[in-house]
Image 1 (tube, rainbow, N blue to C red):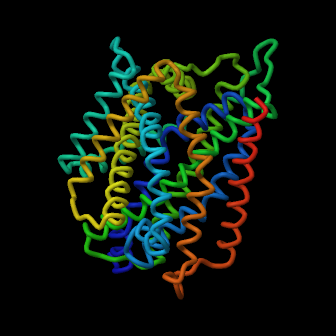
Image 2: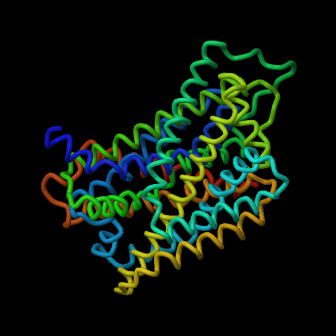
Length: 414
């Protein structure tokens, strides 16, 4: 193995973890739902969201490549006010987002186990196990296993879509009326879809925190090229899979007259049914286990990401060095997520839409923070983004601000 490949393998990790986090609610729920409800109409929206959000995620990895530190530290260097804003954003979102991903994971586990327990108690068990794993420091070994299971889901999804394409889209049921996109309900779903496509912009800081951990683990500080290659691999995977999940919903459910359920466990059954319908009944347990494992991985990654970011925010703002803050925040977030879930029983769509809409509303601010830091005086030479990326970021800010204003306009008209 040559030195260049060996060094890249030492770098590889944060981008893959990022992809594992993204392939959760945004893909399994929102992308599938977009295809099921609107066919291929929202394909351009999925592509646009991935394109226009790209610079702000790239800026986070670029900052870490330049400094060896998370962009959270960059916020403080530009001004503590930026870090205060980011801290407020994080507190606003962390309970709702964690609730949404653990709620979907609970639905998949309920469907897999077939036991008569309410979704919030399945979620409580999942969150409890996640807290124990993170507290014990065993996440690294588990993460490797879950990545392997995620590959199973990836291959299964592609297989199901190819099979669905070969079969062809079934004829719509009699008197099928397509959902209207250009009304309040349709536009709000559009904004919700793009809110987590590929994920929330404020989560972009996590790649830097994971990259820091990777550097400590391997003792190797990667070059900018290696850091960005790792990130781009993860980002491209998530973008492609978003299209794949939308296609699965469009090919299997659009025009069928079947509504995706508001119950987490019933939705899980419908989701797995799409695969078994395309691949065959024999694949049920393989898909069910892979889908749950993917969402479990997303849940534990989200808990870890929020725990790390809140720990760093508090440390930088108050110059503290207490590592126990990480576990404190993980427990607080898990408890808060459980309380949110308890308010949304049998209302999966509302919880997911709430989480994704909130993420989209704060996306322009989170994107601006990353833009402000990456073009600060701390970033010089080869680490300064190229002009095309700067202009794409400007276009991205206009895109995010425009749709946020549309959302508030819709709310005002209700």
